[in-house]
Image (cartoon, rainbow, N blue to C red):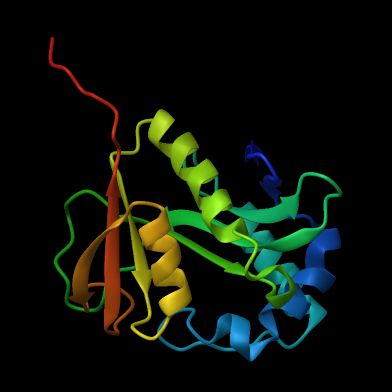
Amino acid sequence: MRTIASNRLLLRPWRDEDADFLLDLESDWEVVRFLGAHPTIMNTREDALASIARRRAIDDPIHGIWAITTAADGRLVGNLLLKPIPLSAGEPSGGPTDVEIGWHLHPDAWGHGYATEAAEAVLDDAFSRGLAKVFAVTNPDNHASQAVCRRLGMTHLGRTTRYYDTPNELFEKQNGAVRTSG
């Protein structure tokens, strides 16, 4: 998986030596409370290592799950993902796979603009590689992530139950590249 840089951040593949940070991050209920339909805290270093292995297993030219670090000193601050969104049970499939962007950061890193900056860098990279559009699926009560979506220029599409078997607020951003037909 590639590394993506922004002005202040470096998004890189997760490493086994990041396990203690990931355990600290995802054992905090305030961090994970909006992740998925049934959020759970991480309990052990072994859980963190298994999660890192799953994150590294994504082998795709566009998708990935990155560790967000500060460029200046390499300090870990969070997680950013760009991956297919799981459809809710009973949703029709067979069309193009919808892709989501998501983030969660350590509370020590909240309020610094890191989520927006990291997401912008990944979106720029993904759109330059041909991704046509991306969604953000947010818990209706996750106003902080919804504010990030707005800062990213994403369009609020309203509430949906299409993903994760739970109601979510859905945001979309389309690739702004000009397409011409030959």
